[in-house]
Image 1 (cartoon, rainbow, N blue to C red):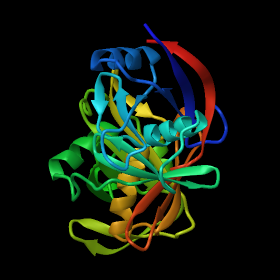
Image 2 (image 1 turned 135 degrees about the vertical axis):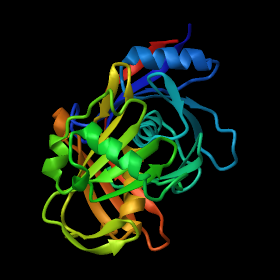
Image 3 (image 1 turned 30 degrees about the vertical axis):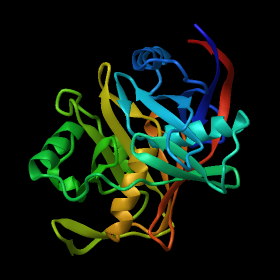
Length: 294
């Protein structure tokens, strides 16, 4: 075993214990995939990352991202949390932006005051869900099919299936059925305020939003005991932003709230630049710092 620098970071919050925790092993050299997975499962957190030397030109570091039971090609809160820990440990980017190498390729991370923000990677799959999937998700969330106002694939590594409900209150009230939703990554979003159906866009309603309102988001994924809920989810919020802004259902700049149902207060800042790049940002804070024996 080797003593390795370690941080546990709370992401999408500036207040410890109100965001989404992440374990970061800042030196993953020499560890096997099995060792990384075993340590991740032991932490009992939603994700753990391992920092390694980059293999692609232009990258500042490489990261491998694990959640219980599997490795992920990309995830949002691990991206921001790892960048925060890397900077806190003395990391120096080659250019103005930090460039992370991971399973989906190179991901840019920019600094905006106290926040870090990553450039959302391209969707691997978008477009409306099959009607059978929508009906299954509605049943699994304990809602009527008519309560789903819009839906889309939001696959950017994690294969999120996303549904838009009528309100934030309805999002917070859903009670997922683990037996019905087994094996699915489900994202649920609803507006914090009034929303009106003003027309049709393909098979989905075209919704009109007040650009000053927040959205409420929840994320459900397969867990060790059936289905788990993620406190704050960067990858899902990135894909939701690409879907909703692209479909004209959200403004180019907004803030999403996530974690309320888990007594957290995550805040995800979304902005789409003129060139179409969607940036997903938030604050992070280090809660634990030291070494780990691996």
